[in-house]
Picture 1 (tube, protein in one colour):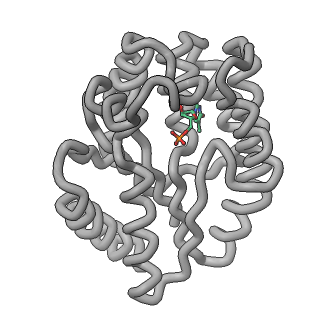
Picture 2 (cartoon, rainbow, N blue to C red; picture 1 turned 90 degrees about the vertical axis):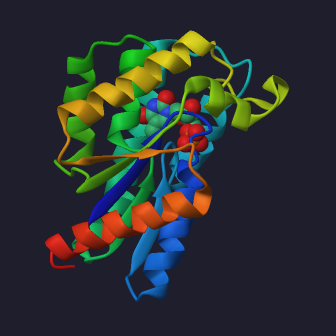
Length: 206
Ligand code: TMP
């Protein structure tokens, strides 16, 4: 069972991933909590470079690095955990690339799809929880511009394109996506997420 969390910067997805992970582990599920970009030694090392402020990275290089990290992540972490019957919670996955490199950087979505298919080896999330907040609200939550990373510090119009991209993805695949109002209180969101995940686990007999 693969459950992914998605959303723009400051949408609260990392907090919700952690809360859900603790909740499921307490219920006795074997849970693997991981994230992208990152999730492996190789990926976490590249993450630091990818997000470093002031680093010149063109869009295509960014896409290919993100995909290289994903290939390693799927191979080393996600696939083995799924094969072992674990519940994998991933803070960002394939949809982030459509949203950021596709809608944000305007790279052809077909190219992203081809690469995603290659690196994921056919794995698809069973459920994707999209935390929906406005770009203004998300960036405000991130705090001072001076502490932002290379992608966070992109202009508001970039983050608005990413947000719209996520909304489009959710509309195109309503069975997989579950959209949550990220402006609600943390505990209220966690309750909504818990209920949804409980139903999905039940429907898969997990
Ligand atoms: P985070 O905000 O979840 O820590 O993610 C770090 C950044 O990585 C965030 O700005 C979005 C970006 N990202 C992409 O641009 N493409 C991707 O495919 C992924 C997984 C993340």
